[in-house]
Amino acid sequence: MTRRTTIAGALGALVLSVSGALLGAAPAQADDGQVSATSPDGLAYGSAYLDFRSATRVNINDLYVNDRCPGDGVAAKINLYIGRGGTIQDMIWIKVGERVDSGGCGSDPVRTSTYYQSGYEDVDAFAIKVCGSGGCSAYDWRMNPHA
Image 1 (cartoon, rainbow, N blue to C red):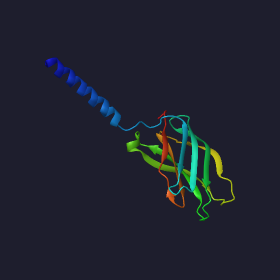
Image 2: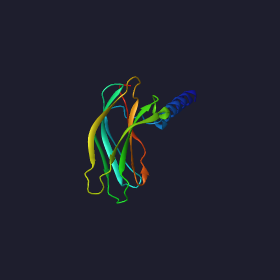
Image 3: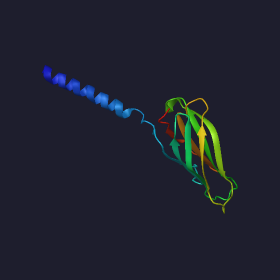
Image 4: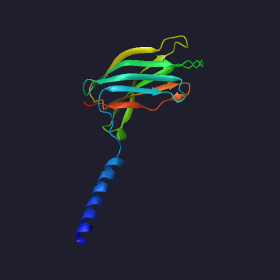
């Protein structure tokens, strides 16, 4: 009887331990890669490939924003943010740039590349938000593996 209780107690502790690990927040992507977002109404889309070069520099390659031509006179905009705070739960997002597709229905999407370099503080994360006539998307972000 004592042996069964000990085994059951050990299994119960193992299940609690595994359950706790599974219920925790998923870790952020801590590497280079694609971010993309669409405005809530689907009429503005943007994306970029983030290449973290150091704790203070990120290259923003293949930056793309497109107004999907709603004919409402509102340009599509991609906002660029750095994150400071260490963990995503404590992150403070600071806008550091934007690109706008203001050419109207007949224009090509905006395609460019740029970079962000901090002079003194680490860039813990980088994010984009896409805005159009229907408001702004949520952040799509990646953590800096060098920070």
